[in-house]
Image (spheres, rainbow, N blue to C red):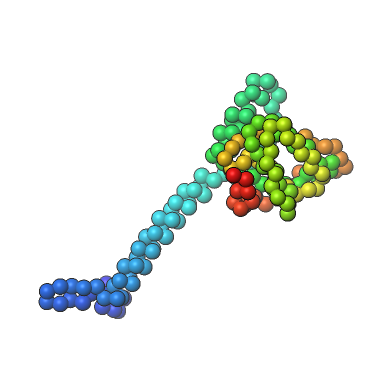
Length: 166
């Protein structure tokens, strides 16, 4: 390896071999590379497990309605990402049914939501709502009738925004 890199890595004496400064530097860089490989592998596995996107659930039967909070809690524990959106038209009324959630309008402080809390969201207001980082969140989102109403899905909520409530 000394020939390959063009530097002396060991001082070879008659009774002992010592590392040169170049060898110490090479060892330090090798350890950094191995640490970077470990970090990259861990991040790739975590990214593979991360699920992002939208889910719409329609549920009419009472048995399914009773099972949904537990299913949602389990899903939210594993997949925590939420997406900003804006409800165009008449807006949205958000009611916390169970668990503990967050609601945040763009540029404002996040608001904690507990069962029974109700938020009236005017049409066109960019916001997100979802489970608090340490909880699950079951809610009703009622669309308010309005002219040409639709949801506009925007960018994912980042870790700093999501971690506002503990």
